[in-house]
Each structure stands twice: as structure tokens, then as C-alpha cells.
Amino acid sequence: MTTLLEFARVGYGYGNGNLFDDLDARILQSDCIALVGRNGVGKTTLLRLAAGTLVPDSGDVRLKNKALRSLKQREIAKSIAFVPQNVEMPFPFTVEQFVEQGRTPFLKMFGGLGAADRASVERALELTDTWSLRSRIFNQLSGGERQRVKIALGLAQQPQLLLLDEPMQQLDVGRQFEMMDLIVSLRSQGIAILAAMHDLSMIKGAFSSVWLLSPGEEMMQGSPDEVLRPEALESAFNCPPRHRPMLVERTRSRKELAQ
Amino acid sequence: MVLEVAEEQAGSAYRGEQEHRQRWLLAILFVSLALAMLAALGVGAVSVPPRALVESVFGIRPLSEEQHVILFSIRLPRIIAAALVGSGLSVSGLLFQGLFRNPLADPYVIGSSGGALLGASLGVFLLPALSIAGFGTTALLAFAGAMGSIFLVYWLASVDGQTPVVALLLAGFAVSTMLSYSSYFLESFDQGFGQGMHVLSSWLHGTITEPTWPQLAIVSAMLAIGLAGSAPLARRLNTLALGEEYAMHLGVSVQQTRIAVIVVGSVLTAAAVALGGLISFAGLIIPHTMRMILGPDHVRLLPSTALAGALFLLVADTAARTIIAPSELPVGVLTAFIGGPFFLYLLRKARREVML
Image 1 (cartoon, rainbow over the protein chains, first blue to last red):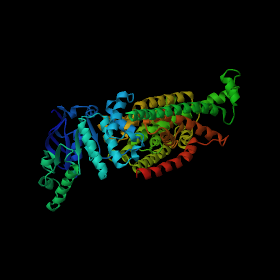
Image 2 (cartoon, chains in turn red, blue):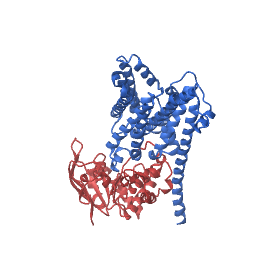
Image 3 (cartoon, rainbow over the protein chains, first blue to last red):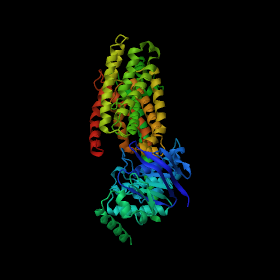
Image 4 (tube, chains in turn brown, red):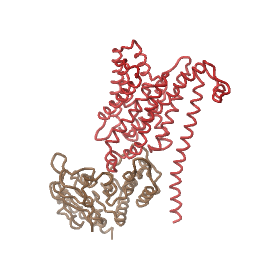
């Protein structure tokens, strides 16, 4: 299995202490990774480093053995799509116009979308089941529809790696399960996924591995069963022991639901 | 399967309909602009009947001497000037709205017109010696002023790459007031024995005075450069609507685009201000109206906005010089009457939708 993206001794900080020191990690082509950790621990920062919009202070993030800092952002965006948490549109773009923006890295200086670009947009709309929304105004969509349309924009980039920042945010339970189904189906399309996740109960069954970030400690990597253990979570989330049963219970109930 | 094919056709039909609509709108605007120009030639303190116009165009009967002078030395230059000014203001409004990600940006509101005015006044008051190439210098200084003021407003109003409505409006208001009144200050250095004062007063009122043909040539060239420069920027403004970080991720060089938009927008503002002075809100009304018809795609909006802006200001200016004939209103007064309420409506809407 070839390595798609590699963090090689990556260091990054915002001035008041480093978020990452010598971070080593790799994403393989078939990976579907959940990135978990408490608020402010650096999940979004890690995604931005992976997308090349932040450049590490030390070390390198490499896409197929090429350092991101040596690549043009245009080239990176053809392989890696970053779906941010919030998108505020100042104008009433339709869903289709919104998703078309995903073709930006492929377009020439002049000239618009060609047949291949259109096909790619249409496929992205189909994969995310947003085809019927295409002439709606993006700003008027519900939270769940908006999340799917944002992912459609990412898919229009025809990425090998999809970075999702809190894809479950503000979704009701029904939409959360839809999102998990979408993630599973994307995985079966051969797209690697790295998703920052808040809801730990959703991870098992859908994700192949988990990266757990804890402040001041090395990132923990492993299968969901290895990482999502009470001892590890307790310290990473600074969660008092008496609240632990709830966590375990929720994990269990999700498993039962899956069966 | 059948359903899929049907849906696919529906998809392309929808896009086709949009393109269809754009072509129709462009054709309608083009024809209206031509008709409005002819009509505007005919009306005024001395009316020239349409029959005389048509006959002279087809060489049946030439115009009288007096009619000829009125048409070609007074009215035609003014009509062209109004169209150029309207086009410049509307397109620069469209560009600034895209840049600030804010439908309330307009060269007048954000102070770029004020900057252009100050620059132009510098030319008129302090450098009258350059009066041979005077207008060229004035236009160039207007351009520099417009650019300086937008950079200033942008810097004052942006917080983490966002420009909140309130910050933008306040910064624009402060800068534009400061700059406009600085022009009054320059008045005291007037070396042209009242000549400059007259020019400044017509600029501050927003009056399109009868320009000379060389002046029109300079402004036409500026408008052409501005429009040509806008074309490759339009698509980038669409991507920029997603936010600066997202646009950067998609491979748009945000910094470069931002500077290019400011330069091109300033060329257009300067072209408009050099001929018409402070004409408010035209850059707000036209892009917004076009957006209601065509949607927010800047690529699609650009040509229609340029034409509609020309048409709007031509009609407004013709009204301004005829409704109280033989006296004249500054066209800036008319656009303020129409644009002010429009601006307030947009502001209320923005408050409901985006929060300040």
C-alpha cells in the first residue's frame, strides 16, 4: 500500500508554545482516519498543514514523497481537498455554482469549465446525493444539505485525499448517520479520508484508524479499538473518571445499532 | 436509468436557460443603450426632432449649423461621457463588492471616489502648469488617489481577512469625508483664478460637464483597460466568495488577485470621477439589479453590468439636464435620490441575512 501523505518530523506553533513537535504520521491510499482530541488541541491546524494552507515551522508534509512547500497550491488542490467547518457565502450562489468552484485548480487563466469539468461536478453532486439540490441557493440549505454540498465541492477537485473538518457539526442524528454512510461510500470509491471528529460514538465501523491528539503529548495512532479506550480518552479529554461510563456506553450503543 | 437521463437533460436545460437569459439581457441592454443615445441626442434645451436626426443619418437632409454644433460639440460628448461614467462606476462597484465579499461596497461608499477626487483636485489646483496634458495628469492622479484610499479602507476595515459591514461602512465614510474635504482645503491654493474652483464644485456635486474629445479618448481608453482587466478577475472573485483561505486552498493567489482588483477598480473609478466627480450609488444599484436577474456569477455579470451601468447613467443624466430645463440638476443629485433608499434597503436586508 503506497503512502499518500506523510508528516515527517513536523513542528508547528502559534507563538505560545508548539502545537506539534516532531509529528510523524502517514496516510495510506485506503485509509479512513478519524482525528480526535479536545477543543483547541490542533485538529484544524493539522488539517491545514495536510492541505498545504499552513506551512510547518520545521519538518515536512509530503504528498507522494514531494514536500508540499515545494508544490504550487494549485497542484496540491488537485490531489487534496479540504472541506472547512464553516463557509460563509456573501452572495446567493446556487449549489451547482458553489460546487463548480472545486474545478478552480484545473482551469486555465481565461476560459471557463469544459466538458470534463462539468462531468466531474455532476459526479460530485451524484456521489453526495445533492443532484436534486443543484439549482437551490447554497445559503438557504439546511445544515445537513450544506455539509453534503461542501463535500461535493471537495469531490469536484477529484482528490485522492479528502480532509473533513467536523463534518458532523450541527447535524441531527438522522443526518449524522447519512454523513457516516457518505463517508463509507467515499471510502469505497478509493478516496482516502482524514476527518476531525467530535462524536467518538460514530467512529467505530466507519473509520479504519484513529489519531488522538493530546496537549503536550505525542499523537496516538491505531485502530479504533486500540485508541478509543477509556484510559487514553480520559487523559486526552481531561475527563474525570466518573464520567467514563457514559463514554463507554455510547460507544457500545453505536456498536449495537450497527449490528 | 431513464430517470437519470431525464435528470441530466434537466440539468443542462437549466444551465442553457441561464445562458439564454444572459444573451437576451445583453441584446436588450445593447439595443436600449443605442435607442437611449439617439433619444438623448434629440432632447434638451434646443430640441432636435427625431425626423431631422434620422434624415441626417441617412444623408437625406443635413442638419442646420446650430443643430450640428449642439449635437456634436455639446450633446454627443456628454452622452458618451455619461455612458462611460456609468459603466466605470458600475463595474468598479461589482469588483469591489466581490473583493470585500460585501454587496454594499461601492466606489462612493468605500471612499475610492473621494480618493480619486482628491487626486484629481491636486492636479487641478497645484499643477495647473501641466494644463496642456492637464486632463491626462488629472486622470492619473485620480487613479493614484482612488487606489490609495481603497488600500487605506481595506486595511482599516479588515479583521482576519473579513470585512464586516459596519467596519467597511465606517472606514469608508471616514476616509471619504476626510478626502472630499481635503479637496476644499486644496481650493485655497488655487492658482487658476477660480477655474479650479468651478471644476471642483461640479465634481463635488456630481455633474457631468461637456468634455472635450481628447478627454473622452483618455477616459475611453481607461475604461477599455479596466474592462479588459476585469475579465480574468471575474472568475477569481467567484472563488474568493468562498473566503480567502478557501480560495487560497483552491489555488487562487489571493494577494495577487486582491491587488489586481484594487488596481483595475481604481482605474475604472478614476475614469468615472475624472468626468463626473462624485456620483453616488450607481456602483451599488446596477450590480445588485443584475445579480437579481442573472445570479451572482461574476463572469456572467460583468458584460451586463458594464452595459446596464452605461444605460442607467445616460438616462439619469438626460433626465438631470431636461427635467428642470433650461436649468440643470447635477446627475449626482438624481442618483442619490434613487440610490440612497436603495442602499438603505440593502443595508436592512444585509442586517437580517448576514448580521453586522
